[in-house]
Length: 304
Image 1 (tube, rainbow, N blue to C red):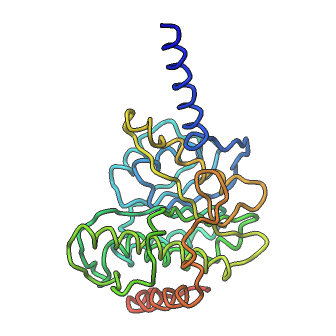
Image 2 (image 1 turned 180 degrees about the vertical axis):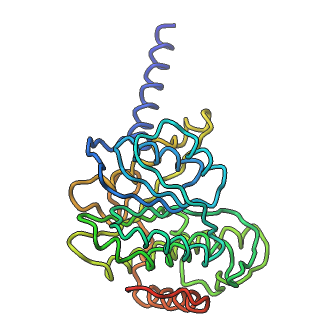
Image 3 (image 1 turned 60 degrees about the vertical axis):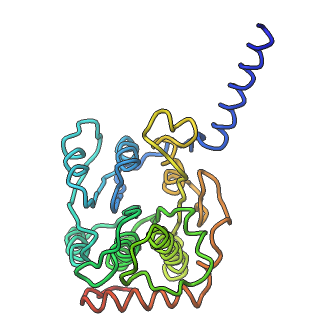
């Protein structure tokens, strides 16, 4: 009986140590964000509210652009926030909606100290938006591209600006510049839906890599964060991260006193991203395509 109990305790202790080491480690920082403006583009239900709570507890002034009326309503109604929060309903399937949002923020004429780009959809059926762009590509990538370029001058005004893109390890599954251009309509199969998501995250990561070259400045840096797999289901959290654990890499990118690494997995610097994203030819092709798609909609007045 004692032997069985000892084995059980050893197993439980080992499990929780391994889980803490790989999943549950926290980024420790007492740094305040008072008088710092943070723009969150597309907070998701799973980790969006958790991130906003954390930023608010550090007294950041927060601007939230969400396409989900329920998230907007929940944020507006909640009483736990401790700082100024501006909530805007934005349609990520319409580039004009992104441009109008950016115009509204531009009229405030204030620096943006932290930009967190997290809008995404997964496993969506193929659909072309009013901009003649496939919906997964537009939501997960092109709207981020347009927003960053539209607001670039306000990032540069920050004392210590951080531009952060939430990526996914699925971008590593792209092994070549795709033959099929997923900004166009594709056949509806499970495999193509997965590829569309992978490609959109690949494009987002490649854009971030190129952007860090174009916006290099002592007071500004660009980062990608892979938060890992997370769940709100209590049982599933034994084998995956909680939303609170999933935001730790984002907090590291925001709160680090020193310049954070370009690519963060969990709360660690990593070079384990798809090296194709740092291929100059692919990055330039993607940039040219993205600009043309936005110019087609007459939305491409930027400083980059």
